[in-house]
Image (cartoon, rainbow, N blue to C red; front, top):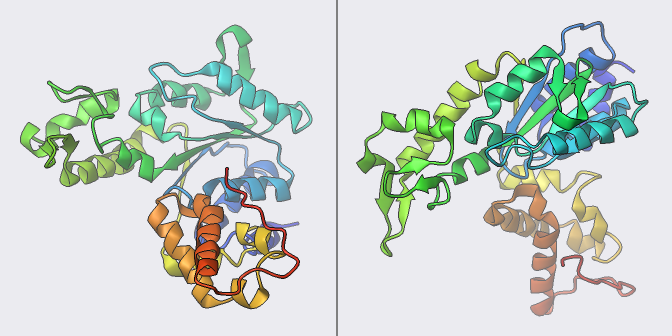
Length: 314
């Protein structure tokens, strides 16, 4: 199967992200099926719930590429190599134990926030990972995909959780402390009507732009040859995503009336809930249930006669 065929098959499931998907397919195909001898690690950047993880998993499964996942490896002052070793073990178990595959690094923005990016990037660029008590791992056949939520980068500056020393306005992040001096203290911190100290909107946007343009470019270029940006999602894009065969909407096909679940009104209401949640497509199930439960309370017919619906939400 060639690259175009992979793309055409995948885009039926991965709605609204054609450009990002095309670039992901191109890079992975060249690395695992083509003659590309130079590994290209990827930074996949987009808002929370824009489909990053789903796109990677669907592509890896169709291309039959073994994959491992790592969560929270960079969310403290030291890189958690135990978690990285566990992800590599998972990747090998999913493959042929030959060290080839994809390692998906969730919340990779933390590597920039806590100042691990240069250490880790230099290590993976060298092709050898020092996993401490687990020894050295030859990572020359591993494609590292750093998944970055731009929402979480922005949220570092909301409230005091991003500040380690409120009196001196010092950030937890070494990266942020390097660039905070570009704005005066008065422009960095403000107070709301309750006296809570917050980073102002201008500073939040400024820092986000700095991270995007400076730290996601020159400092990561050695290890990450590719940066793929996901499309932003509005109401129309979310409505389209709900039509995907892998959308959570399909979980409710046996319970909701066909004319109801397929209506534009219903899907636009669901899209509205998703947008309000701030969690993107991660909030799809909750949004669907909120919508039809509220409609049922208004005496609208929403459930099929044989439905045994039980909320999937915990």
